[in-house]
Amino acid sequence: MPAKIRTIEELKKEIQSQRRKLKKLRKRRRVLAVQLTAVDRKIASLAGEAPPAKRHGRKARKARKGRRRRATGTPLIAYLEKVLAGAKGGLRVKAIVPAVVKAGYKSHSKDFYRIVASTLRDKKFKKLGRGVYTLAR
Image (cartoon, rainbow, N blue to C red):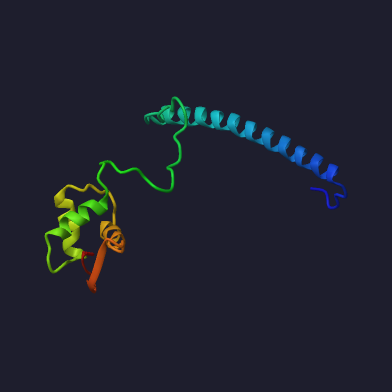
């Protein structure tokens, strides 16, 4: 980029110029990627290896961040209420986690304990002591 751009028009022209250069470079990169794939296939065939698999169709999308949809229709809070309804003196989180899973809640979480513990902070539940919860009445 030039050292001194004095007007907005000059700045707009410079932006357009940079965009054109970027477009050309991206096109060149795609062409080179195709050529590189062809070279990799030749190397694999000469080395006696299986060639890399061809990709067909659209590119895979990146995983979405944010809230995921639940597989079943019943939320975790409903399972927690069901489990804690049968416990008069309350339950520890360590005991609640397997009870919820046994009740039928499916989770693929690596740290399901933390999810249950954070859900128990809801106003529907009452903390009796350290790690011990019951239903708020």
